Amino acid sequence: MTLIKGTEFDVFPLNLGGNTFGWTTDREQSFAVLDAFVEGGGNFVDTADAYSAWAEGNSGGESETILGSYIASRGADKLIIATKSGALESLKGRSREATFTAVDGSRGRLGVESIDIFYYHYDDESVSIDEQIEIATDLIDGGKIKHLALSNYSPERLREFFEKAAGTTAAPVAVQPAYNLLTRRDFETGVRPIVDEFGPAVFSYFSLASGLLTGKYHSREDLRGHARQGFAEAQATEKAFVVVDALREIAEESDSAPATVALAWLLAKGVTAPIASATSVEQLPQLLAAPQLSLDDAQISRLDEASAPFA
Image (tube, rainbow, N blue to C red):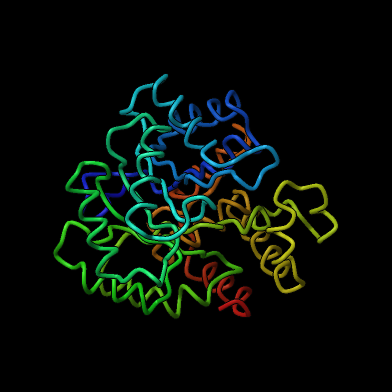
C-alpha cells in the first residue's frame, strides 16, 4: 500500500480504471470486476463524469452511476474514488458554475457526500489559476471534495498551480498524465520535473496504451473490431511493436504477462499507481501482479532502449 502525500488515503499501487463501466462492461460485469479487484487487495478506482459519453446511447455519468450502485451495495469503506470534470460537453471549462454543477452531479451519481479525490480533468486558460485555486478551496471548505488533483495541464500552467497553491488546502495531491512505454516525452520532459519538486502522487492514464501493451496484438490488423481500436491504432507503429516484443521477452523471462511488465516499468519510473482497466475478472490478476514484479536494472534498460523513440 502507498500513502498519498497530503491525504489520509493508503492506496494499492494499481488504480483500477472505471472507464469501461457502462461501456464495455455492464452493471453485472462491472460488479464482478470490482469484487475481484477488492478481493485481490485493490481499493482505488478512477472515473470521470464524462465516462462513457463517447459510447453510442450514452451521455456521460454511466461509470459513476455503476460505481455508486456498487458503493451502496457493498459499503462505502471498500473503495477510494477519484473522479473528474471538464470533459463532459455540457459542463466543459473551469468556471465556478460548471465546476460546482459537475461536482454535485458526480456526488449524486456516486452517492457520496464528499468526493475523495477530485480532478480538474482539463485546464481552461480563460480561467486564471488564482480563480481555479479559489474554486477548489471553496469545494474543499464546503465538504464537497476532500482533495484536488490535476490532469492534462501544460507544464507552465501546472507549475503555476503548484507554486500558488502551495501550503493551502487546494494544493493538488496528484497529477494524472498520459504515460506509458509509447508515450514518454511529455511526462518525462515537462511534468516529471514539477512532480520531483512538489511531490504529488502520479497516477498515469493510458498506462497500457489502450491495450496495445498487453502483448495480445501482433499487428495493426489484430486491432480490428477491438473496442478501443481507434485509440490503439494511433500508436500501433512498427516502432511500437518493437516495444511489445521486448515486453513479451521480459514477461517470458519473469514468468509474468506483458501487461504486468508494462505496469511494473511505470512503477519503477516512479508512478504511484498506474491506471489500468479490465473488462473481465480474468484480466485482473496480471494487473494486480504488477506491484509484486521487481524488474532488474538490465530489464528496465532494455525497455528504456526499446521505447527510446518515444522519449
